[in-house]
Length: 259
Image (tube, rainbow, N blue to C red; front, top):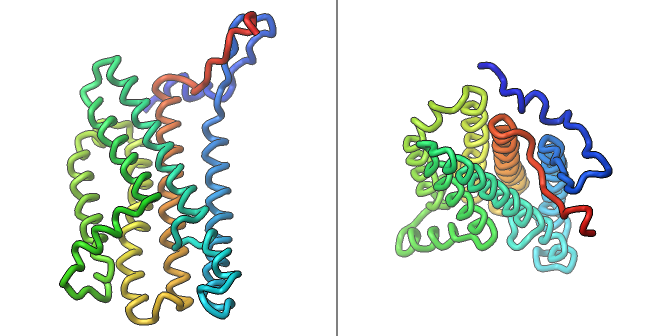
């Protein structure tokens, strides 16, 4: 595949002249993705430490220090890691909807695929903040004994939904350039592997060793780390796809002559 000229020169744009009537701020999308990744690594490390403090160091999970650390714990909501994950998912939703609008202007046959995926990510962002999936757990578990790998039955629903989306988007992926199709699949695998795959394992760990065990801390750290990594890789994929398709991303500022 021959690279689009905009992709090769996206980060080598000349600065606007001082006398220009309008200014355009070019976004360094790769720097944005790197920054998000660094923040995710820090939050994952701090979150794992917070979990250890809550369950291994504090007298009880209700102790003062434990309550403070719960705002940094990977498994508590509301918390800083949960807010960050929700915001990254929201960024992905915005990018997908933005791409769908650009595709609509050119009558692209996959416009609705982009839009539908944007709405899916909007739903994921909301769920990360308000935890609708826990309601699914309660509905499925009502009157039914769940344990072991099925301790969190919502994961079965989540896995089924992920498979439906994958097969529904098979033709969409086949029509993407190989580089972007690969990145789509890689980021999706990381996210689903963390959000759903590790949830099955976490259920079994909790059932055998309890939520306060160090084994659960390890699994939870991997789970949330994979989710954030998948979301950020997808954000990188979408911004790179935009640059490849439409040129560098930027924001138009006010007309300088009117300031």
